[in-house]
Length: 215
Image 1: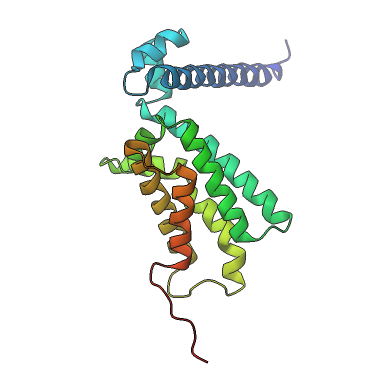
Image 2: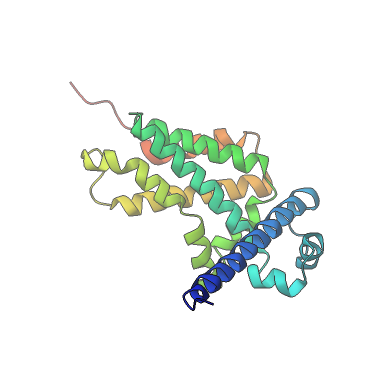
């Protein structure tokens, strides 16, 4: 037998194992999200997910060290869709603020549809465990999407200069998080999209009434 065949066989075997692991993770994720939507996040246990995915409880924890980590994959998918939309619209020449409001609306629509999933996802970003909070922040880079949208305005000198673009983007993202979390937990008379637009308008235009310039 040709000895050069051995590395190929080893690589093929490794590749097969990796594909199997990816398929298993995808199945666990799909099953978990379905259970969260049908039965609620809080009442769904890791054992429930493992059983419905036909894996052991230990196998579930091999892929997701804690139940909230499943939601981070969900949130990451949402962020990727928002980034793709923003990049496409900016490439087509849409005004940055128009794109920002579009992204705001899309995110509000997603949160409205999946109202029960948002609070535990938001709480994970504020987890007292710094490692878990850092992992959540990296999985949900809303501030990076906002920074991408506002960068053309920043480069054109249309943004305030006493704060960095990163700082401005972080503040806008943090505002979304808190307003959406309050809406998801307590509700208001307004739909979330309207609440979000009011909050964004307040951030962009300010709360203090400005006197018209004197002639």
